[in-house]
Image 1 (cartoon, rainbow, N blue to C red):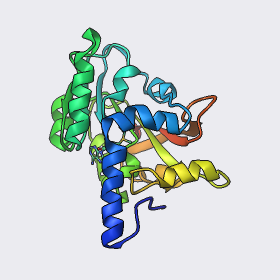
Image 2 (cartoon, rainbow, N blue to C red):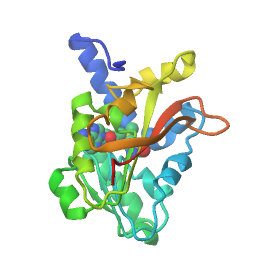
Image 3 (tube, rainbow, N blue to C red):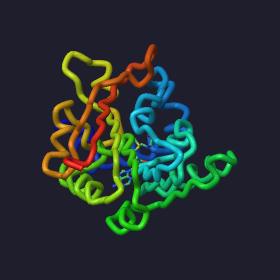
Length: 223
Ligand SMILES: C[S@@+](CC[C@H](N)C(=O)[O-])C[C@H]1O[C@@H](n2cnc3c(N)ncnc32)[C@H](O)[C@@H]1O
């Protein structure tokens, strides 16, 4: 696993915190980051979710509510993120369009109680796994697998790829501290009760994208 964080020590810690603040600012995240990577089109990720009007969608690590740009009508949408500033921006964004006003956002971790209460059918983890340690990611997958109504989980993450120096430079500049090599992502689901049914690497924009992301579709094993 590659650790994209700043080096150790006081200076490294300070640089790391400034990096998190600047790159995590909603304006930088929504407007500057897409320019820096040649454009971002997440349609293949949300297309893979196959969300229908009767689906309850949970979006863990929802950030500023990017999913709302891609999802069509669903029965309910619940976004969770530990960053309160991003959640405030997501709420603002949702309120601007009548079709997304029912979206709900929570500035906290997603819990097993949430999974039981909301009974999600589709779960999106867009850009989340590379922010989580292996243990955190494995724990999350186990929790999601226990959701009785769950049909599908879709993940998308920054990835280190052999022979892709531009992608790898961008990946190392990412705020996520757990950017992985491609084979390390599906391994996170081993023994969780979810099976990876498809995974592929996509460009962040089909024609101009400089960064590449690994996308996985997971479904409850043996259901
Ligand atoms: C790369 S951003 C992706 C945001 C959004 N899904 C998107 O595609 O634009 C990753 C997000 O995960 C959030 N995050 C990191 N760890 C988290 C956790 N344990 N639970 C929920 N959100 C988390 C971060 O605050 C950040 O907003």
